[in-house]
Length: 173
Image (cartoon, rainbow, N blue to C red; front, side):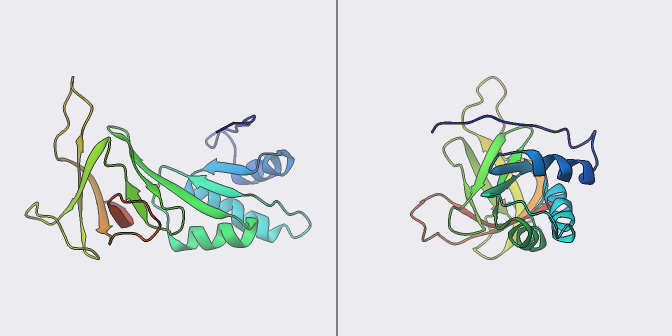
């Protein structure tokens, strides 16, 4: 769809208080940041009772999202936290469901498996290691690569998207 202007601020070069002051001046309806920075900004925003900033969504990347991140973003900004799951080697692996907090694996570009210690698929609701196979990298094939993450396998989703479900991403070992 159509896109608008983008504004950016380096998360490494500025502390959370500086970024909060900057966010207050920006007209953008979305904030793209790490889950830990989203949590910190939400804490600062809730403490700053004189100034409010409504957002349509906070989109996160790069870290594990916990329930506390989602709750803080909703309370501070009236926004839904939307996460994407990716890796340096494979790019995007899954996106958050538009209706729920679980993820849909992008099975058209990568085959993602959640397996037990014997490399067998785990059942829905069970935790396992994440293995990925690239489906479009011919020069350097990646086959059943253990990326070091753990996740919980999910059940089919009622949202109408018929991609494999990751109930929760637990992070690195």
